[in-house]
Image (cartoon, rainbow, N blue to C red; front, side):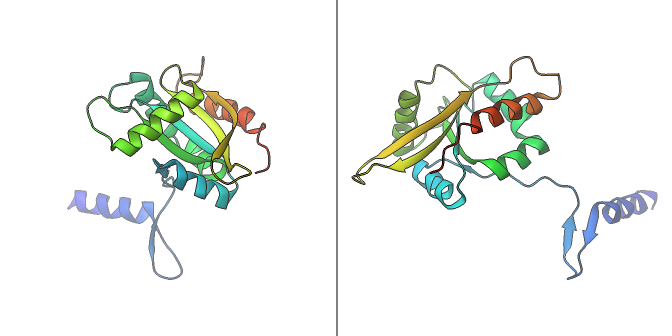
Length: 173
């Protein structure tokens, strides 16, 4: 009985009833939307006037990539920042799962285009169609990786500072 009362108290404490009678969780961070298709990410980028944030990762084998995911990307401050400032694009190079041929080609072409030396690497950029409309031109804003010398437990703070410095290079699309 005591457990039921505690559970009920917890539910009442953590949920907020809106005026319409809907139940809404309180203080849960908004989720991130990671695109894997460059053209779709660019469409969102154009519609929202936000640059693309390309995360080059080895999702199933790269230890630093996993640290980036848990110590930066999973933090509420980063989630808020990303949703306000960029369109997320994951460019994965897994070892234990197979991507479609199209996705592998796209990811390899972008890795080569940006001369990615290792993982994790983030490039922020804008993309525009060429003047003749046959190709896309990439306007690179800058790159970064795992935050250097962050305060332990505050990796996202250092990362956001670095990312904001890169975004200052943003030029109107």
